[in-house]
Image 1 (cartoon, rainbow, N blue to C red):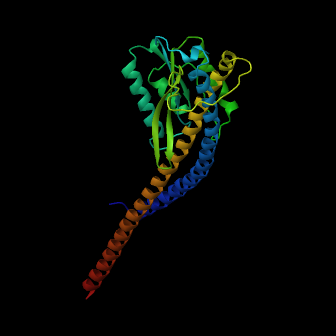
Image 2 (image 1 turned 30 degrees about the horizontal axis):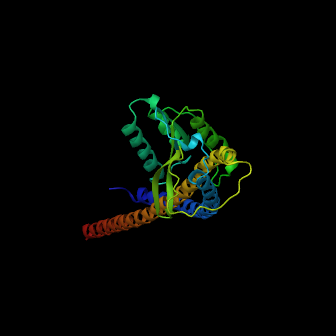
Image 3 (image 1 turned 90 degrees about the vertical axis):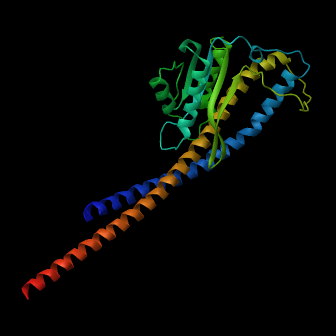
Length: 286
């Protein structure tokens, strides 16, 4: 049985850990509010740019662009969004498991795909499992600006434009609520999933022509999909870390209660033993 000093030391160390997890929970909660605001604020821009792209691509304009055309898939590109740090519950493991399953099911050789990891956890996972990495990005801030990811987004889009890959997918955690995130596999390119059925197309006058607008707008649209997924993923990361730290804090509470009970029982047993020895000693002197 552990000594009173050992139990007391465990109680004190658990209380110290609890203070850390509680502080991390509060920090993540604060970051979550800002990340959720950023993700929601980006939605109107995405809706409008999609409306324009849908109007040109889905209307009877006759405009066309390579990003709107499917071609035989010889090589696939995957962008995977993870965090730079752990202690985020299942946030990283879920999205990496989905990526690994997709690769195992769809590819028999590393020549058939390449990965662009955003985050140290994803990068380390790809290296450990021998996945080919085209380009990596680490150290992104908790509230990233578009300028900070434009280079990597443009790089991924150019891989498709230069026909180095024939499809581009992005894996990330879609933010639903503070306690719920869903792993999402979204096809970024080619843009063949633009829905026009049931939508009322707006009337626009284009200057210059539709072809030139598509040439400029489609790469921006694809880059915006990547940025939107990153904002979504950041909100999910903070939510997952907040939930994980809250669970850790609650578990520390339970452990402290159990250790305190064990300490009190051990202390009571020690007192009882001392009383027994005193009574026994007194009886021996009579």
